[in-house]
Every structure is written in C-alpha cells, then in structure tokens.
Length: 405
Image 1 (cartoon, one colour):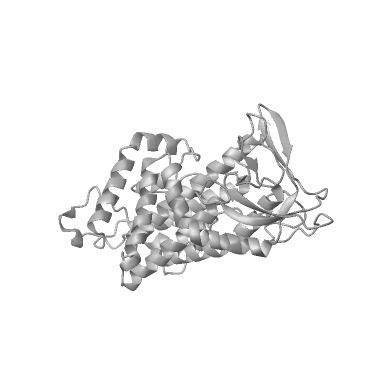
Image 2: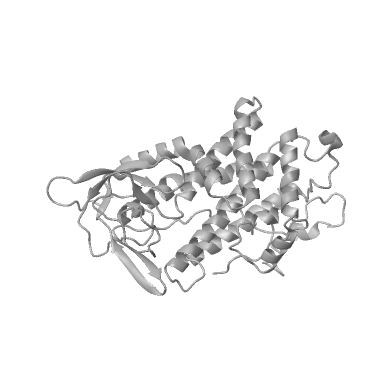
C-alpha cells in the first residue's frame, strides 16, 4: 500500500522493513498504524484450484471431454442440475461413457464410522465447450437471482443478511450514476456478484432435478447426505469443477482483486462504501468455504480438521491480507464516535443518508455481540461464520492466527 520501496531489515528479515522502522508511531503525520506486512492482495487465494480426484483422465482443473463414449447409438440426454443457489436449474447435455479403472463413478459417505457408497450412472458432459457456454450464460443470467435467493433462504446471521442485501441495493442505486468513479463501483459490484455465484458453485453438492434422472433411483438410506435427491454423475461434477475454476473463477478473481486493490490505493474515499461491502462479502465467503471444507472432512472421516488443509490455510491467510488493506484504508474510523451533524466535514463525506444509517447500524450490531466476538476470536474459532468479518470492526487491529494446516 505504501509507495516507498520495501527494503528488508537484514537483522530481522521477517520483521518490519527498514522504511517502516523509520516512521514515528507518535508523529501526528503518521495516520496508519497497521503492522508492516509484505503481501499482495492480487495474490491471495479465494477458491481451490485443483481437481476433485474423481478421475485420472486429466490433471488438476483441465477442461476436457471424456471421449470413451459407450458403443452404439450416442446416448445423449438432457438433464437439469440444481444446487440450491437459485430457483432456476442449469440445463445441459450428458452422454454415456465407458468407465475406466481410474474413474470414481460412485458417491460415498460416512455413517457412524462406516463407509457407504452408491454407484451412479456413468455419464459425462456431452460437450465441455457447450457446457462452458451454458454455465457462462447461467452465470450472467442468474447471479443476481441467486444472490437474492441465498439472502432469503440461507443466511443464519442477521448482520450478514443485511450486508448482502445492502450490497445488492447499492449496486442497483448506481445504475443512474453519471460520475465515472460510481460507474467503476457498479462494474466492480456486478463482477463481484458473478464471482460470488461462481465461488458458491464450488461448495456443497449438486443433484439432478426435473424428469431425467439417467436411470438412477433414489437412495433408500436415511444417512445419505442428499436425502431423496439424485446425485449428479461424478464425471459431470469433475468436469464442471474444471469449468468453474479455469474458465470463470481464475479470470474473475484476478479482475476483482485488481480492481479492489486499485480502490484501496486510491486517496479519495469515494469508494469507501463499496469497499466496506465487498470486503465483508469476501471475508464472509472465506468463512463459508472453510465451513464447507470442515463439513466435507467430517462427512468423509478425514483425520484433518478440514479437507484440503493446505488450501484452507492459504484461503484464511488471504483473509488477513484483505483485513490489512481494510484497516490501512479505514484508519480506525468508528462511526459510533463520529459527530454526524455535519457529515461533509467527517472522514466519510460521500455517504448518503441511507448509507450512513446502515454503516452505523452495522457497527452497532457487531458491538452488541462483543462478548460473542471475544469468545470466538480469543479461542481461534476459525469455523465461526463471523471470525474474519468481525475483525473489520476492531480498533488497533493486528493479524490473528489462522488455520495452520
């Protein structure tokens, strides 16, 4: 964030750099007191980048057709897939293939220490390029629908629900803005929601809905994680995972983090409200993904606290990098102690009446949970949904421990 060159201290290479050591923390000219850290916002991890170990036909998140189609007349069918991310399912074509010894076409789960599994129909995407286009259109058409659906059905926390709702209202309010900086915020928010929708597709489980179930019947077992739903064929899951990551998450996250970094570095506070909302959302999603990795580890009897422990470690380290940037920008602004009688003379002169009211309410809601916040932060409860977002509201913030793997 500083424009001066970062020169390591030869006596303590991992400690504060030499320029930071020369700053006086007691000088009135020093307005930032965040710890010296050498991290780039654009290099943090927001999603898992590898494959799902469902097949060895390709490595990592390579986007490929299966190719070993079943002999005879092509068995192509059209299915609808749902993941409870919006009311509208995604529709695409699948084709029957001949499984190899490296393909895992069964769905497995743990029940009271016993591994159970059910075989699924051997179908894969009929055409990965066509499926890529299908998801791209689905993303563009339903990201906002999905946001409103998840707000309505999935949030357990009132503050999180209100922040996501305000983020959508903020985006809508920018539709008539003429100033370039506000149009920049609108484009950023649109891409943020698309990134959010794509990220959510990498968590949880999907299932087939509609009339076509590919001959698979419902599992008659109360312990089955999907209940009476029919699981999506495993190779389809693996191929869509590659599509999500390679074709959408990688370019979208790079764009979002670059834009967010530019807003953080801007001296003007025009983007403060946009930054506040998007910082909360990114931190909350990091907690959501961590929770999903914990769920998967428990369902599959993993010895580690999280499945993909290295990924979770990098993910949560990224949360601290976001928080570093946030507190550098915010300079310990506390809306509850500001005299708002003349808002134009405050450090946040660009907030309108509704935005100001919301910001004050958000701080009040978090302060009202002080006891809960302290209990979860002091015990390093990384699985708490507000573990990272609650740190946005701290004074004299310093990086906290994250999952060490």
